[in-house]
Image 1 (cartoon, rainbow, N blue to C red):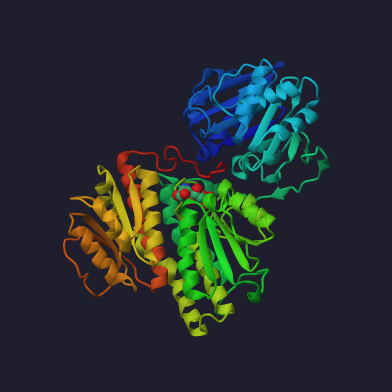
Image 2: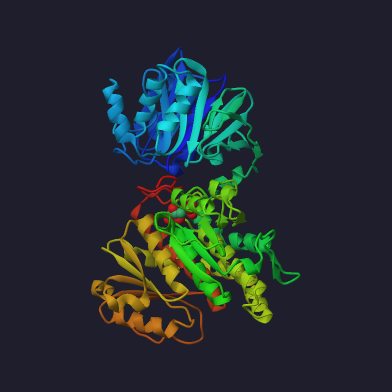
Length: 606
Ligand code: AGP
């Protein structure tokens, strides 16, 4: 949830650190700070709010240190203000941290007992004083090793020392951390994105590892302090994909990129010449699998829920889905003929990564559906299915959702065909419809003007509901999440058939209710659920697909029609108007579209 940068160079580094922090703001933006070393002193500047506030601080100009660390924060312990902003420093040590130190209260008590004075309410500050305490009797490597062993919880750390003007320490447990290699300088960063503008040569620290980063070389150690060798990865330079182009927001760009996301995914996996889906090197035989468990968080969980309907329809596998933060603490009954599948855009979500770790420790089969192929979840899974949608920067996930459900749909289709759960003729027909999907998404994106005018319905209401059945139910949840996280409106996604079991009481005159009722097997039932809410005064926005038949109902406030295709592909198209509704509603409110309040793009703490 926070962003870390460190630079060790022979040139002043404060400007480069500030520029890198701006690229990291998608990970958290409550507050920001920088610390550099010069003339034997640690110089620290911190500010509340965005990196721009930090940059405006006149002290930055006088920071001429050639070694420094920086941080953008998403608050976990202590209010988002300049006191609690990172770095946290004593006279001898300065630390930036991403993660949660679970035993910080105990450590703080011990350190206060040793005479240490605390300034902030953060868990991070205990690390500063613990290192300072250990440095009294140990050298740097030993004091770091001892400190890391004493910490419970997760951390990615960048540490500089007053008396060590030529090194930065990086350490990692649970939260990602990368080293970057430059000309006569080296870097530390929460992920490759922070380092991309300076280098494409990257090394990822593994769990429990730490490094000593000098300007001309980097040494890596395991948690016992043994030196280890690490691979240097060369990343593709996709810098241009990281800018908004002539879009006002990354989210607007990423919504419009969805036909391309679908095209890329289809190109990657579908062999149209042989009318097949290629999932190369799938490690398991069909006889080894009898069930699949799909696990994720937020939008990625909605992808899992969407996939559940497809796996049930297209395969004879038993299917279960789980929210990662629930799965990781439940008493799971592991079965070795289950494929545990982890869905994550960033591949760094702490809860999803922890759920993967539990399955790996139980020697289960693990598969990752991710966008960032060099991420922790990808690296630690037995098998990876990349979604190839390019960098998604907007905190509210859009193209990654469509990319995830596309891969999951193709996986279900492929497994169904390998196991002869579906006839070849059905497989061929579905594949043909799938290949046409990007064009239909393109056309559906064109329903923009109508959605813009409709979206103001959400601007001064106390809540709203999104209803769907069957394939449309996970999309109703996703549409509600988009509105919540962008427009800060309470929006509830609900199975349309469940309304009469309580939530109907919420319906009152003028309450906006979005009803997803495509002409599929559930259509008639959903229309009658819709009439139940209209009868009680709801202002219904019906989202359906184009058809020659009229909709069998009156008093519908507005209708949006998406393009039509076979019913199991309609969820792809129904999603698009919901993303736009949320986008335009937030735009009218003047909210920050790409960095909504309280959120971050990659939730790397639990
Ligand atoms: C979705 O719009 C949110 N940004 C959030 O729910 C996100 O999907 C969730 O945090 C999971 O992230 P991941 O896909 O990177 O694991």
